[in-house]
Image (spheres, rainbow, N blue to C red):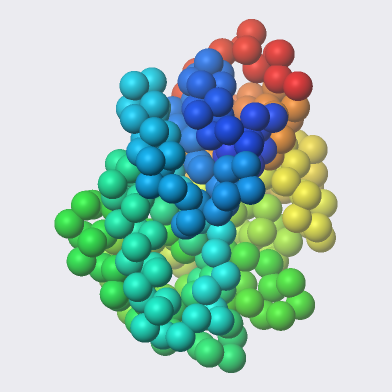
Length: 276
């Protein structure tokens, strides 16, 4: 069976305010990596002191655990030139830390009125850095939130991937919970399978972004796993739900993916049983 790497989202760990503690805890549980989400102890990743970033990177390397980044910024209000500079600075920071997967939302860069061209231009301005460092920039599908935010519609990804070909460093993160709400599991996975390199695993009731463990909502996790197989998926699975759900959510995910011909990381059952 093909083995997929499994990460845990720092935002859903009990020690989320201390990213080094998150790395230690994820390592004990048996995860391959940690996705560093948004901020540590109230400090946004984009504004974090360089010394702290490098301390986190060194600790991850000492543990032999990978780190991905999920910055949470709202840069649609910035002038175009400043946006490009801030985005390049963020990508350069990730490269210095040894991060090779950066998960972003299109609406961080541009709102619907500004249009996709602004997000594409800002991304183009970082392309040389990403190519030199072999870094993947992954744009995530999002719910529309009543605002038709960029990244909420299939047409947005059609525009994105008409601009960037399959060999580009710009790829797609499928958030299963968001796709479930928007009824987009099939079209995202089937229409853009060549670009699908990362997955946020979480469940919900089909209406609200609840970040439940698979099996605790109405998402068909088997359908996701089999869509991955049809797309020849070889990317990362990030558990994006609370630690208490890992006891049931990880086995449910592993079983579904096994039925689709995949093997996931073998997690430490004893440590998982002690999750708060």
